[in-house]
Image 1 (tube, helix red, strand yellow):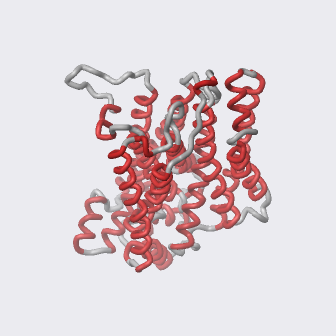
Image 2 (tube, one colour):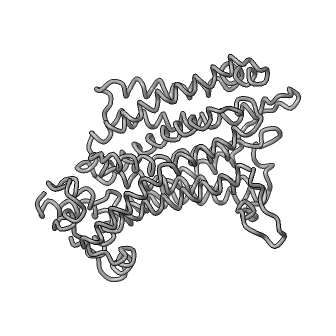
Image 3 (cartoon, one colour):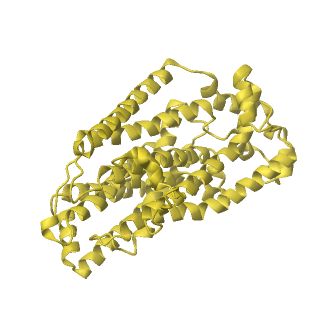
Length: 451
């Protein structure tokens, strides 16, 4: 890559930061209004109590816990996928990694809010935090909620570090391309980056360490989330398969979310020159593999329930597959297996549009899967006289919709403040010495912080 080509690449990827159109402000206003509506609805719920929701005995977990599990699963799109691709040195990952890592951070932030939204007195949320109070009362460390706190906090901290480390050279690039207050702000974020061989070597070492450390953390997080269910004596929950089942589902929905985010960025930021069809082709193959794995786990779960033939579990299985929840169950199967398998198994259909369609159905199907894990089991426990029904109320629906708008709003604002594709990594990938050592690579003029 010549210096002219490198400058052209920098100009293309910095354009969204340096140029702002009315469409951007219109989109921010639209998404912000939905988020504000959701916040207002939450305050309405706090003022009037949980009676405004559809949550009732015996179904105390419904939309809010469904959204909690769903967003924690979406968070596996970024850090886990990015870390694995970095460790195996997949060259095609370079334009994808930051798009994915951002999803992790924002999805974790949104998902972590739902235990607080689900509290009757959310101003006492700090009781979820294990701290030595003056009353000498500690939280129950046998509670999965305490495990969730430790797991999510650790994962969020590691994911933020994993996101910020490769952003440092790009902060320096923006610092040198801007002036005034903006240049000073990016100068602080760049941490004095000058692109010296010593700095490059330390950056590469830190990224390698974080990539190795974040993988077991990411796997443990959704395993611990599955413990919220599998530790409870509830029909179809008390299962040893829930750990790998939840992790596979999380990666499955995460890949789908990443494909949708990349397609939106490619379309609206005109990044066709950087996000190529091969990226969607490779991610589509991963999505197909996870779809088959999800189908195996789903069949396995229902096979053991059918074979065990316990009364309560059999009733829960029947109401899910042939009763009132049957339309949702078969819609879930179609969205998570039938549509992705038909589209992604055929190379002619595995295009950018085909991958987007398959990913959109997977997002819908995985949300339905979380819902069907929670509500039918709680509504059909061991004693028939305790059975109940659940119907979502407008409050829950509005708050759920607002979280999707919040995710899109955060993503739009991030793409306005930070290059959504790692510029320096893309230059390394295009350069003829991409396989050089960090010190050799740092000596190349294309990799310096200067534009």
